[in-house]
Image 1 (cartoon, rainbow, N blue to C red):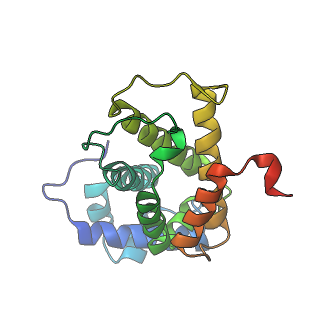
Image 2 (cartoon, rainbow, N blue to C red; image 1 turned 60 degrees about the horizontal axis):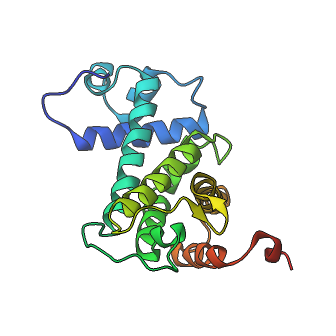
Length: 206
């Protein structure tokens, strides 16, 4: 873990993140150095090391912070504290509310340069897998706050497979959106996700 600074300096960290984002795109992560980052951020190396161990620690902390933010947006926006009565028609799809998805997408769009850089324009799938984990956590959080016992089958599909199918579909839509430059609005992507919930894969191209 990186040495803890006596007081979190968000301005400095923002400068470091901006420098990191630019350098990943212009120089590449493998060839950039801490000196490069410090120079681009307008700080000295000592200041960098007050916050991070090395460039690998920086990248990991940036990813962790991003995942924490997305988790907060997706999980908290669903208002799981409000008890609900499970309906027979409910499914794992109900965990994904347009309100929370839209906020998460807007977060990504607002910070597109970083998402594009950290994912290597969508070619590095590590962030994609992290996002899938966030979606799974959202489903599990919702399930815990339902009054009835969790289902073990959804339309004849075991629950764990149903969850994987759902989160993979949502994550794939979001990931393609990032690879395409977040051209569509968050609302447009939400609509695609909503339609995907009720459209069988075999029917999409017909």
